[in-house]
Image (cartoon, rainbow, N blue to C red; front, side):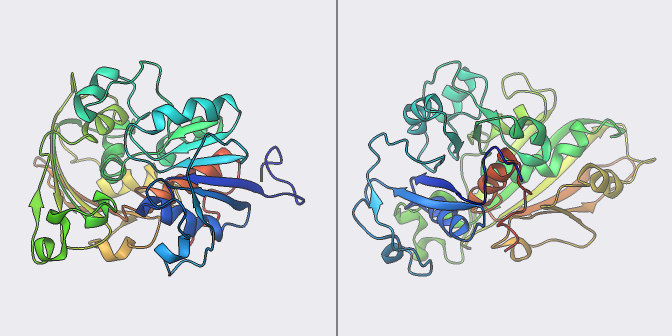
Length: 344
């Protein structure tokens, strides 16, 4: 473990800003059982003054939610806030020398024009932090003091596609990707909405933001291109399904060339060798295989010599898609084993 940050005498203190939402609550649950850190303060806005365990009785935590007023007393800050709010808080935390892991989309995109187009918000051109998808940027993460946690859809889709774009042994150029990804209802957050109620979603499924979802430019950026000037055709149809947690992505990839002389499964297994939370499965994966874990399961569902490749990727949107990945990033930043506190 990295002795710059940890000694036997003192565990690192952590505060969570936005701890009352689903992702924030998952952070609290994970951090309470983490052996190398100590949970310090929980901040919330509408829930300020309430006790955490009153809101989430399954988690034994008697801390009161406080309203954040600019405190910088903890060693590490997780921000689990709606898009747009972290932009105003992160600069003071980084200036105070704190380690910061932001779960919003505020710092993910390098291109401010794409941020404005997809998030409908203006941000400064320099408002960007290390994009922290551990399987693709471990070396950069470990040298960073502030990182931007990837989005949930983006995590599932990027990990499902990365070997085809980023592995020099991939034998064919990608011409197009068609993605249909189904998210559990918790992906919309804790805010009450009629269209997300049980009577509306039970036995129902629907698409939304087709071709316009804010994770689109994030996916393209991670794969070495951009949403403004893409090097391949990309179609993304996000959907919401009648289950609580999980993302199930079906990726259909067409190529200029073929995989006649290459096994996709071998390519993926080699690419993710040493990635403890990516499992390349020989059998079909399901949402329940990854629910309540920090794993991303990938299965090559179909291949042909000259036709498209069909890849299935599954994650828990609240863990590998949010809180679990944030703790994984913290572990890497601190020089810990990245699985610490996450082998649930």
